[in-house]
Image 1: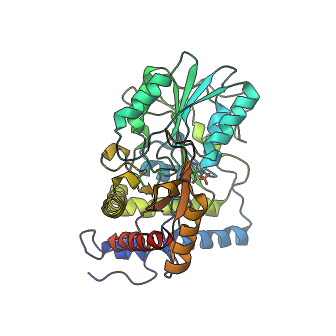
Image 2: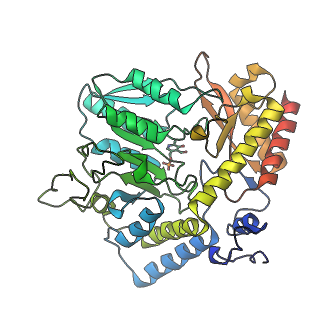
Image 3: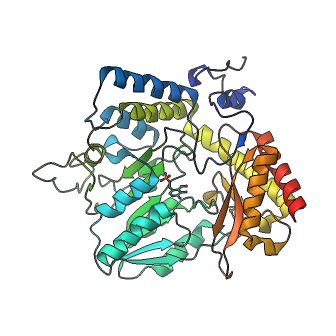
Length: 432
Ligand SMILES: Cc1ncc(COP(=O)(O)O)c(C=O)c1O
């Protein structure tokens, strides 16, 4: 079957077995053809049909002067299905940072309570943790994160287990980290948290649209993820998972005390107690979704993006993007050697579609932030390829390491991976 014409929708894709399948998927997007965009970890690009939905709905709302004092139950029903949870567990909020802030502000933490986290967190999680510290006297403890290929999922369980104390109340970590693209083993860490009676919070900014996870099966209490990065929804959207019933198969612990702090749906008489069984006592996501007048168009855009992903198949997308990052890592190892990798490669439980590595031949250059930035700028100017830098502490190193980070997504193919590797090899050679 011929590939769909420019402007076609996901409903007209050829069968997945077709050799043209992924190039047809690429044509669903309006990305500038002169640029190879490989920084999806910062922001995605909505497919054409999402843009059409946004445009049509913005115009309908304007024409009818429509308001939306709503909990968007219909949109949440579609979105929750794709993420393997119920609508009462799924809020579409503003972005990951917003989701993390609402989670941390909603918990009943008090002076002396400890949050156990890592030294590779994003400000989206660090800032609300710092507020809990400064406002309530909560203590933030951080484990130092390993980097590179020489690690296994079990290492993370040990790392956190050793740092848990009698005051630890929360286990909070990014999966994957945005710095090294290390996918922390969420179900194993959720189990650790459960065994110690801890509240588990995942900064999963990169999970929606990249990984085909069923949120509920992960066994965590909270997960905030962007709907505008790998999920390619409208800017300023996220999916926020909140465990809202006790399903012993996934997490037998009682639900934590939690307040929907930003809400115009909070009832005058207060909320009933949280559920202690398999049925929700109330729809907490509805309370958190109801915040004054919202955007019908943006919510329709999120729904449309999720429908495109569900139509293609979330596992198919995950396999494709991980296949490309695996290929990228192989090529990096061939040229630069395995020690240049900050992302794990060989333990399938730790991999994702973000790849970080040290691009220069001289080991002293790992500390040179200016040189890494210059490389990324020249890659854009001279080769039309967009990636980003990444810096982070490394165990045993007095100074931060400076890496480059490449995102491989559903609009990429193997030749794009070869192109970025060739360009980086040539440029880093010239700059060495
Ligand atoms: C791990 C992580 N958390 C949070 C964020 C913030 O994301 P958002 O822009 O959705 O708030 C990012 C952004 O890159 C991130 O990588």
